[in-house]
Image (tube, rainbow, N blue to C red; front, side, top):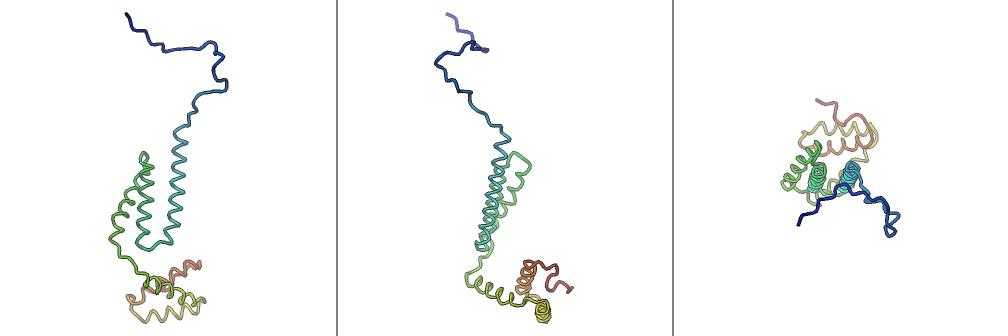
Length: 165
């Protein structure tokens, strides 16, 4: 008894009546199209998580950034962009080492931001800067930080206290 030879080039000359008329075969999606969709999904996930990070306490922002960068690095591991996984892992390692801010501290800072927002005109800001210049920078650094953030949010090009030095 002999084994049958494998038929490599099987050709159907006539379709049988029982075959499905509309069947074309399995549709193949090209790999680059799938990779592009995965990258777009990862980007949208990263953008969504970064907007969520704005409402989270200070300690969790590095954790979210680390998760996003690490996940993007894993998704893109076949490309040179996988290098972004390293900063993500560094964020994840250093996040537990950061001191957390208590709720009372964030409430106090929010009140301070509201009070400093009342100084809205340039003349009032200059008077406040002149007053802050009389004290050491270590004592007024939080106030200067809040003023700089408010100035950037208002679209001013000059930083408060930027003329010193």
